[in-house]
Image (cartoon, rainbow, N blue to C red; front, side):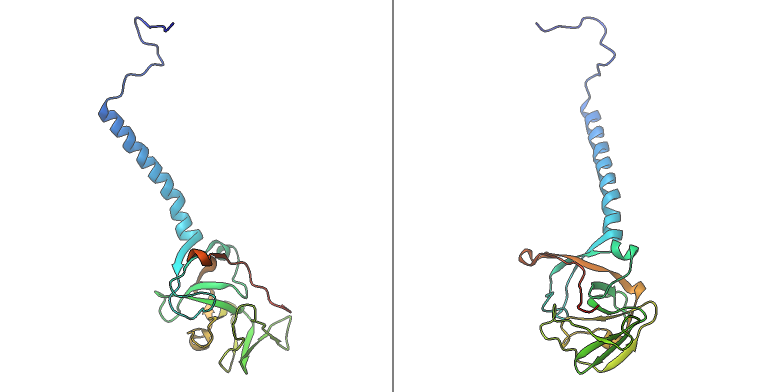
Length: 204
């Protein structure tokens, strides 16, 4: 049968909370949850990943206008962009604007565009080697005629839509400090969801 306690309450028993005390406890709990959430979200948002959306047609057919992307910033805090990476960067002539392009030339290399083809000159290939971009270009043709030697902190970036892209052919190489991160995931539209791994090239 139930037992009743007569006399003094046990030391472990607490007095019933008043409505005011319950409200204060609830507010304090909400503040704690918010503080913990911000402590997790803010570093992730500002130092690890960021959301962006595509504007324009410079990366078609691989990225279309208003597609939403998740950018990985952590990889470039630990290492450097690699050839084929799709990167978001500050437009050198107006750092408030963000551009999205593909890494074609790496620091110290010479990039030559001639007859619609790109040839890369570097230590492993002092006589140059053609860059095979058929894996991601509808037409493997780059309109330009120029030769650019990159400095130790510069990258040569091109849009995938070579006939409609403002890129390094026009504003020159991009410094490492301007590159924010690489495209990691396309999250929207849902039917075009994709994770982007490192691009590989034959003969490189």
